[in-house]
Amino acid sequence: MPQKKKWDVIVLGGGVSGCMAAFAAAKQGATTLLVEQYGFLGGSLTNAGVGPMMTFHAGKRQVVTGLPQELIERLCAKQGSTGHIEDTTGYASSVTPFDAEVLKLVLDEMAQDCGVDVLYHTTLVGVRKQANNIQTITLQTKSGLLELEGTVFVDASGDGALSFTAGADVRQGRDADGLCQPMTTNMKVSGVDIETLKAEIRNNQENFNLRDLSSMDRAPGFRWQVFTGSLTKQRPKVCCTRSARMFCCSKR
Image 1 (tube, rainbow, N blue to C red):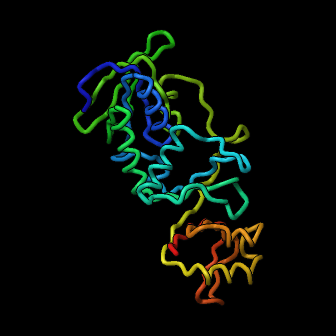
Image 2 (spheres, helix red, strand yellow):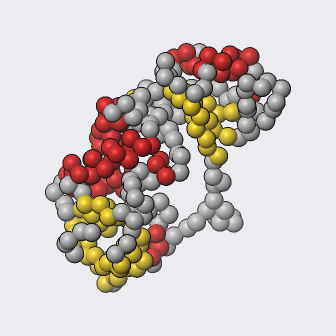
């Protein structure tokens, strides 16, 4: 529970975007509070199985640097990532695999190092405005309701929670019917026989979305592959699933 009542910057949402906003503000000398609904940081990357990160590059040129790159370097130092690698599907210029549990730890450490105060297990329940400016937000914490004043508020909630509550115009989904993009079905698999998987891909290319077979040999021990085949029992050692993404981890 923070002791002060007023902050220079209050960031709602402790996903990676919210973390970067909070870290950057604190590094500029602003008193910064980061509000997160779960008991850890990282957002969808740590609570929903989303990964790998993509992409830090435009072609071969790295265009995302600064604090996000510092995050990756810290992950690599703790063996929580291989760093940026080629996307073997050709979908993005690069992908960055990571260990979600290590990511939680590193984001926590970066928050402490930058001087960001973090309020976990906390959700937004109200906003008090003066004219069109937000003056305070009311939060539901494990200890009860808490009203905090801020100079700058950053909505990094992922679904515009602060903006909507404050009365801003919002739009959900596509214009025609309001429908949103369906969720992707993800699964993580360990203990994969990489050589057997490579052989299966080479021998049954029609079941895999891989543009360049040679990319399999250029990639390090982490593999990212998109299976587009059907469930089958014809080859008992191989399971291909329709429209599912599989993240295979194997250390050589």
